[in-house]
Length: 314
Image (spheres, rainbow, N blue to C red):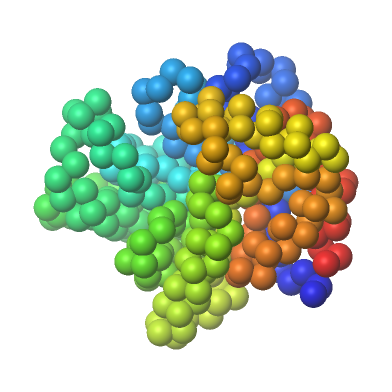
């Protein structure tokens, strides 16, 4: 099987500091090297939890920093937990980021599954789906309309305009996370992409991608205009058992579950990883978001120089 011609590869920004301290110089080097190596995009995720062991830099701040250091690489989030933010403030922050990056933003959004966070943010998890849908609607309207009057269940606006609007028209691409069939169909209806979770194995992603493709067909939408992607936790090491041990250490520090890592990750030598990635592509992915789990700077080079060429050649 030859890899699809539209297959692209992004990489996670060095945002998570569960096992090592923040080093701005190393972060800068990584971001600039990712662009130089030709990665399609650089990604953050929402880390709203309060577990100290899963320490992470805030997503919009991280992308803004990356925008100042780069010129071409696209900047994405997979995903922002919209319900934990004001949609007006998020719309403003992301419009500003799209302006400052000259139109490089991919706005990933999700509902999130951890409802216990709501109390810490002074929110109620009740009607969270309705709140999420209304927030996305409001963000899109703020990005595209002037003198907006909005009479929603949760937010009300009278005659307001968000300026400057995003560079990208009608607005930056919106990719949805999620796993349930209803969430996947919502992604097709409301967005321009779906990004599968790294914590789900390829078999689950295959089912998700099938649901997305069915929804695209039902809605008579061109699949070429909708990106199906997956975050892939990866550890490239010719010593497969050593890779497994290090992945388990990372998974314990980040998820509090050492056994999860090997179940959902791609790991082993470059050839082994390419073969496993072939399964992700065969399942429907046209975008792969690499999330290295150890030696992230070294992994960046190996992914670009060894894994991606092998995956494209399959």
